[in-house]
Length: 529
Image (tube, rainbow, N blue to C red; front, side, top):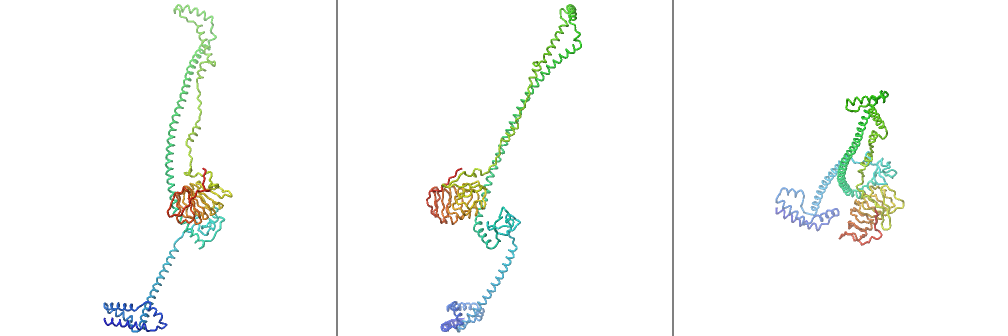
């Protein structure tokens, strides 16, 4: 083994001398360059030493390796042979790697084919949002949205608009808007929906409590009304009964009196009806005298005279006849009757009871949704827009109040130059609702954040008025000046325009943009309710 080691050292020295003296042929120039760049004498020596050390531990294997590599170092040609062998080995390795890469590429192609096949199996939703039985087939150039066949002919959607076929260019444009603008606002949209749900639940909770209170009030009041009606009913009935009892008593008196009269009349009629003409007063007196004498003897002076009876019955008849005059006993008794006239005012009572409670449904935002009568900014008066109203020609100053429930693209005409969002304005503004012709935008204590794209690109002057506390997702680049009133909004340090603040603005940021003092002259907002 020592001989091999010494031999390798001598060979290395000879190799160095040969290397210095040999003139490389042009066709060997590249090989020399490889030798110079990849190997040095020390590397050969180290490699040989390492090989020898390996040989000492494993003779058979290393001897085979030496034979296979043909390392002799006798002359430069042998060195070239070494490089050539190495290059051949490298080429073989490269060929193997290329084969492996080809196999990998084939596998990737197979995977791509499989993915394409899988993608072909995916069913994408191409149906129209508004007409779910129709596919999207065109792009509305006016609205920059996809449309179906029904959308094109519908007066509620896109009739008379301009349309394009769906292609790569307009698809890419709309996708960029979706990715960079609309999608960025979805989180705020979700928060807004959740906030609306929470508001709805809170409002309904209060409405439910008020409902129960109203039910209890109506039930209580009508119980009292029922009790009062029962009491009034009993009182009226008792009064009717009392009057009726008086009439009943009068009737009984009349009946008794009349029966007495009838009895007396019947007695007189029965006694004298057929015999009154037979009576002779002279004879009666003669008979009476004779009878009186006898009676005096028999009855001790008791009178029993027929003519006296006749006189009595005559008088009695006169009395009975006199009772037939107007001012007689029976007529007096009859006049004691009282006819009870019942004045029925129940309809008035019923209507009055119906009007006892008037149910008047009112919007839960009735107080907050009241628009002002007049809005002025400095000397300029602003037209107050209401849902569905027509904006007169020539109006350039417009105010949007809390009564507005919905805005659509085109609701605000492109003639508007200055717009104010009044306190309580609660419509969620999105891109395109406000025209780009607006140069000055004044924002009060609105209810919704200003999403990306909601501030028109043409706005140069942004006024954040007293009470503004919403988020502004993005301030457009064209906004050159921001005016801060009594608001909690902090302008981000990315804003590069001019910033002005009134004395009422109390926010302070160490690293934010510098705000210049501003008195608000000429831009004082006056709202008359």
